[in-house]
Picture 1 (spheres, one colour):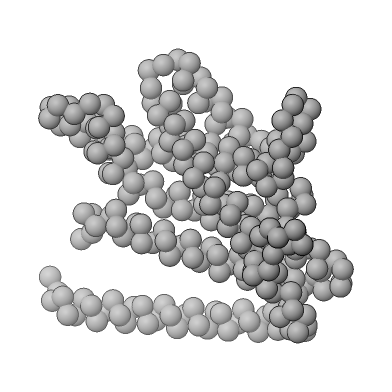
Picture 2 (tube, rainbow, N blue to C red; picture 1 turned 90 degrees about the horizontal axis):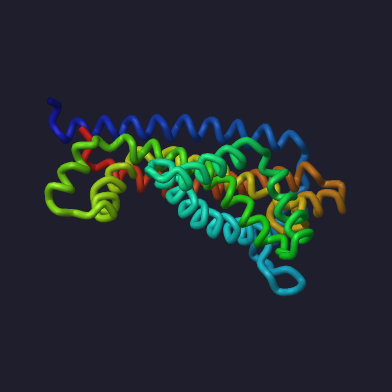
Length: 265
């Protein structure tokens, strides 16, 4: 076994090489976009609105701030739906199992854009008339909850059955076993694919622009169409999505490190 000092030096050297690769690739990336002849004053003028630093005319958030707002509530609701659906799938109740499997089959088997239109345009025909932002949150939550259901189910099944038996031998109830023994161990398996789903949700939130929601993509298309500066606006939107995704990746990496501490060599 190598001394900890040598291991740390090798780790720092590896990170330095990775940073160098990133720097070279980022420079090439910048040169590629500079070849488009971008109008930077125009980008600087529109960037605050795309980034969410300005409010709409009626005083509501827009741009990246609205995208994060939609994703925040979408993430919370999809986690709840996914966990409930996974537990129903693992239960002995035929009704719960049937509802869970029907739910996951429908929302995984139909396009998200169709689901958005069904909620935004279909619900008013039977009574409720939801606004565009709540409709987007509902559609994203239902869609990603179906995918998270399978992720949570696989994470729960990855915990050895002996762990449950050990908890039962200590006199713990089924709910306590699930909350204190099974779920903490399942998190190590669940977090990586769940983080990927949330990053995908961040990008798929651009689909709610079809309802006129003033999120990043809607503003980029509107500004680009009005001034015939599509490349400038699409490039700026791509950069903002990348930055937001990178933030999600950092949070995911910290969660993985936290729940994987007992498994590190």
